Image (cartoon, rainbow, N blue to C red; front, side):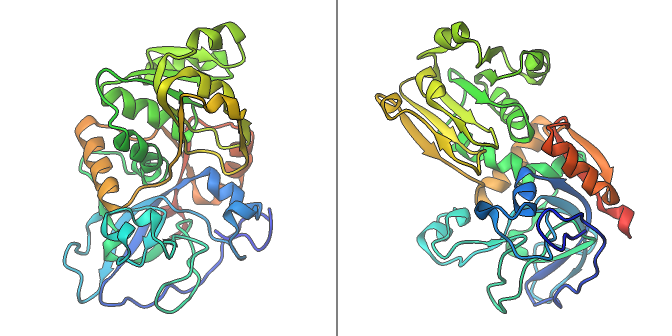
Length: 340
């Protein structure tokens, strides 16, 4: 499913994937998540600029259809998952430390990237098949719903990485800002890690849903009294809001020395400089290979997947329209088998 130009409807488009190299795996795609980043790319916003025709999709699961002659960890028929990074230089300090998302040469993205060997453009997972080097393919945990696993490969690892990096666990008081595709997984993860989790939201109607996901409290961020009560209460706040917003009030809610970590916004995030006094701010994104494997193992242990609404691939334009008006709980997963 491809768009020919900025904000143009997606339609079926045929193209050729590369022939398998010795270390490649061909994946027959079953489900692909719809990420807010896909919308940004579709609108040709500078933060996610990708050439057209655009085939989005960077969180998918499927079945191994073919393997290259040097592949050792996968076999035809294996259930696998692929995220938003499909290659990196693999030799820089960040890559060798397992932080391929911070590759100094910039990682190869699942779509809109350039293949590191032949320079060809990468097209994403809104398609029936993907060819990817073995190093960036992950085994799908047994027992988890594949449609719900797909968003773990972007939304999941994006919130898992900072929670793991800051050693969130029992005794920590964690705030999650926003209850969308990232936020609902952040609540699930933080609660499973043993933290006391509270949702920051502009919508009081989300309180019941947040508690059902594991939140022990809800702070309505448009309520001045509630925000005043939240001041200096939190060890760690994970901001998952995907649009431009001001984080000054959330900075005030962390204890001195606490951390506000921004993972959601691709637009401008603003704050009052004085709000930084006694606090720290971090920016974090999707994780590398070790973190992704760790997250998948944790999800298997705790039976965690994304809450998804499954749509046929041909409904992708409806999915985009609904995502733009925030009409999804909490992630769309496209059934790519409907295109075969």
